[in-house]
Length: 617
Image (cartoon, rainbow, N blue to C red; front, side, top):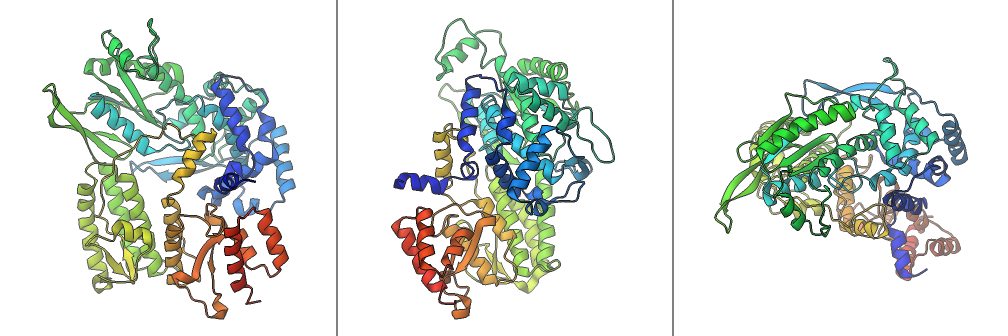
């Protein structure tokens, strides 16, 4: 095998591990060609698909939450491979869903109200994941470009970037804010099945399974006649299928409207210039799940489109809007809330033609500000008095992980530094009052990522000898569009994704912060973070992407031989590689290295580590 192929093999993840990627790619391409699919259950019950589904739900945080049968991923892990595969196949032969456990959680945007969640059993989640992995590539080929929620390689940043474009670059100063009342609870089952059929999903057995899945009993309540429970694995995909029709309907009013003259589709400027000479309403939708905005050039257009959209949602999808939350906003005068941000336009100089130039001014939303204040104060209390078995070091890391998380999310607000300075004022006072002499100006060297990002801040302080991330130290960064080439279901698109993986996975870094290894020293856990950043999230021997379940922090010189938890004595490898490092039989070691297609440099590194490790035995 060539070096290029070996490098590619090291980068492949999830679907590629289970040899299911080629099938998903083919489904995507066929869907792009508007082909129909009548034998999808065969793909769903493939051994590779079931194995991939198990891997994906195992990584999901919700896998530790039990359904009505009180079982979690730990129970599923005890099944034999063949036994589990046969069971899933048998269930899908004559499918009857297990009951869903109902719980209620506080809404993020309104602490006085609760949001119902439906928690399926762990086996139901596995079956739903099997179906999702086959349906997703088909649906992805049909979804609208500016649908950003619950889709691979799309995020809130892309939605905010699109909103900025229409406000600032396109000069669309009126926005229609529409809030769909209890969207997930009001999804029409029959309509959803028809929409899947229209997308080319015409396997009647699969549609029958989905229909049964939607009608699964909710424990203690009964059988629902409509709605798709939030909390299920497949519900986000179904929500996008339902609202995809809305996306394309809005686009048909302007962007995709047919014209007598054939325009170059790559350069739409000429077409739009011609359309502006007509009485058509210029409009563009930006959507994230059930939260969406429609941008218009004129208020009169916005008024007409608001009424038309309200009527269309009721007639076509059977969905009502919330009158108190739905409105038309003049962005030159008022703020509009979107995904935790407040967006508005303000004058900044003039254009070449003398007209005023408007640029986007954005803040963190008031509700998000309050939530950050409340959470940081709660975490400060934990630092003062660590909970249960938690140490002070762990409490500081938990605080740091939260602050880095909100910094990453809200950094795209143009006035983010102003907002965080106001939030930090109260938090700083709380820290001083609660910890008094515990706050120091010097301490242990922080992990590389914190040092690079916050090291130049004059507000960097140390508690329990550990650096605490300064809440007010944040810089605005421009919200970026999704790169067009990025696509989970094309070879070229995946190469773009893998290029991005060269950077440190911040989510994983924060997860490691929140989950230090129990029984290990502070130095060990601190150096584990530094190593993850330094190794760019890759195995030190093979270069494979490290994941929490397969990661091992290895002592080069074993502790029993006087090795320490120092940075230079630690290295991050995969668990499979760690077993080889401790393999005493050299012939077995060489055979395993050959089977893994390790190159000379990798084999040499493995042998050096092995020579140090086997001295113990």
